Image 1 (spheres, one colour):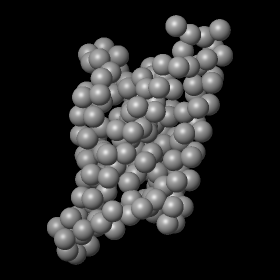
Image 2 (cartoon, helix red, strand yellow; image 1 turned 30 degrees about the vertical axis):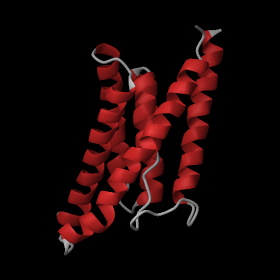
Image 3 (tube, one colour; image 1 turned 90 degrees about the vertical axis):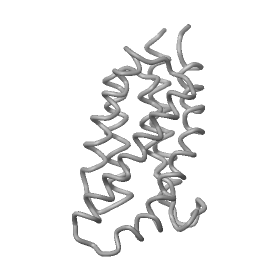
Image 4 (cartoon, rainbow, N blue to C red; image 1 turned 90 degrees about the horizontal axis):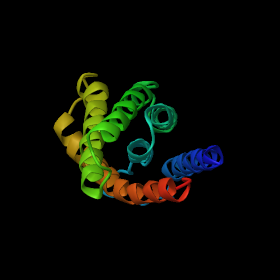
Length: 169
């Protein structure tokens, strides 16, 4: 019985990632705030890793990273690697040390979303030698970080609902 619910839950997560990818990459479908769109797949992968065990969290992180790399930039591999590793360790941390609560999930979402987007900015804008880095960060990346964190709150509640409703308890 548990296997059937697990399959439904994983199918639901997969459909969520696919729909978020479509929503994120379709032009003029999501509103741009201060010239940027959120990276919806980033908090989706993180919130899935709060409620799932390590291996499924790692695979959903890898799938989200692949979709982000395909739809977001021309630098294939950054988000795939970062989300695969991050989701695995976040799942271990939440399984062993933390209770999945709104405050814990929001704090981790904020730290990891801001950190990964900032690392992307450092690697592919600052270290690449492109000019006006400070202006470019505040004109494009800062609003993307805030927008991504805010959408992560909604995705936390969605994935928490999916996890609780599709379990055999």
